[in-house]
Length: 144
Image 1 (cartoon, helix red, strand yellow):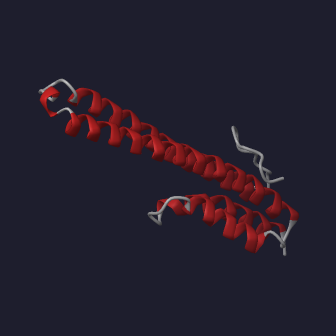
Image 2 (cartoon, helix red, strand yellow; image 1 turned 45 degrees about the vertical axis):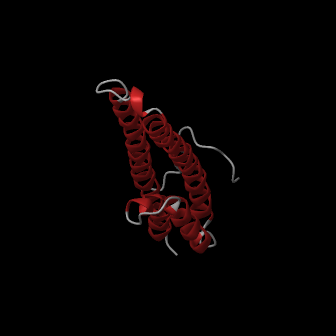
């Protein structure tokens, strides 16, 4: 296998983290990179190295989504309990603005994690396609 094919396959492994944009279930980004890495890692040491790097980054992204999912559930549950357990306290303007702010901040953070994932996956794929070993910033080094 020539070096161009190796670099292209390494870029494809990095782009596996964007599978979560296509399939609507959580951890699709992690599963996509894991499957691609397991299939292609025997072809070349460069693919194995970049696959580990991509997998470590997708573990971080999945953990961020897990934390945001749990906090979003807690925000929803808190507002639901506040609305149904204290109906006499619910007046216009009393609880509504806090709930809008909570959901707005949570939604912005959710979108930022998606953007964070997209930007770094594309940059990593471009670098790997050029034959440059890419290291994600803020990545957890779980798989060595």
